[in-house]
Length: 201
Image 1: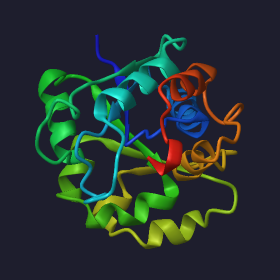
Image 2: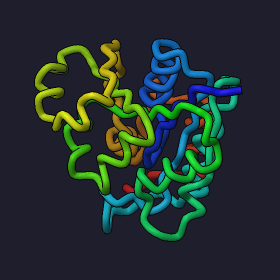
Image 3: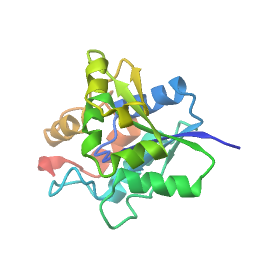
Image 4: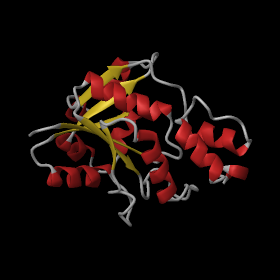
């Protein structure tokens, strides 16, 4: 049976409620059958930056998503030794599931950068892009910033959004500040038990 599958990628360092909300909002609003989270292995946009080990980020993503039957986690990028380009990931999903309709989920604040990604035209051939916009996002401006070849394959979703960033969470954790209500309780427990992000690490 043909399915509508959402794919949401990211470093997920750590995964937080903002990621989960965008995935669920996209699932509901776009009629997706399931959403697959893809933790990045070697992200191209963070060269040289310290990143938590892939297995730890994968574990946190599993913990955050395990109570939603529509959510899954893929190891496809963390098991790829080379740089994790979105187009390669989508090609792999297309090859494995040729009859399914793919949707790539991202934040509308990043959609303008799509033109700088590796083979953006192929990305929108493989999947419809869902751009989740927070209140205050100038959607018309975001559309204008995209070439027409990409624009016609992007769905902009206005949603409440959650103003949470992984960078801010790492900073809070390094200071011993509470993370409760910003990410899943199981992820918070994992971070504490494994002493992640302590002393800025």
